[in-house]
Image (cartoon, rainbow, N blue to C red; front, side):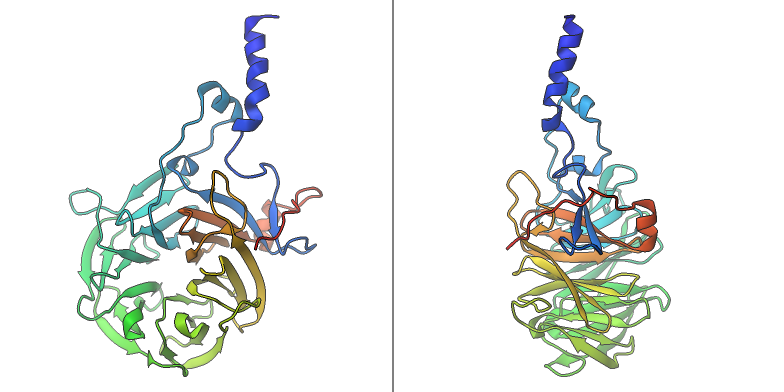
Length: 361
């Protein structure tokens, strides 16, 4: 046997150990588990810089070796996405906002006017404005930082007006920014350029009252959806602050919360709520009907279990139907996908695709 052929056979023998980063490569993971009518699929995870880069072939990895990669996150919190495979993550540990661009296969950060990485005291939330720019909330300073389409921080506002701001959403039609002012138990409304316009709500348990709210999003019909965290509920209201409905409760049963941390609303009217202490996220419709629970406790130890989470926090559902969730203690961002008709036309489910994965605790 020629030496070159012998080397090739040896390389092929070790390919399974090097092929790909995703668990059970080639299999697909759906929820509800075992259903003949799946609704959500697990797609991928992002933990190191190599996870963002285009993957090399298994043969190339075997020949040239596999780099360990550098960890992306230290203490990830809030997340937002432009759609098309780019997502922004506020990282408390690195004191930066990281931009993961899957199309370009690169990771970059927000920068200052000199082009150097911008460091925040305690970045918590990110809200994009649809024009390439957006906003970052900082809990320590009680400030909002605005960045432009060049990903450069250009303004700070809200200091002295906010007390521990967290989640935010930008209303592109009205050109207004809605900020959850957690310790003041309110929603605060700003113009796009940072002028204070309105305060909505107060502390309490009634309609349009809050107890340490943490997040807010806009539904496709223009309604505001607010995570009223320590009241363990979601409130739906008009952008003017008129109460419409509420749903959710504290507990361990399906459809209830132990410690909800963030929410997102997709373009199909689904509400996704991350429940940190239960290590899962819960799905409702806009009417408050419980639809589905995904996840369970799974501590990262060299591999990823699809659906496994360890104290999830920020969550985002973008215009493509992608669902991004920050797995904070594992320092991972997971990517799920709502199975819309458009997605299934491009990615049909065929016999043998579904992997019968077990439920997590």
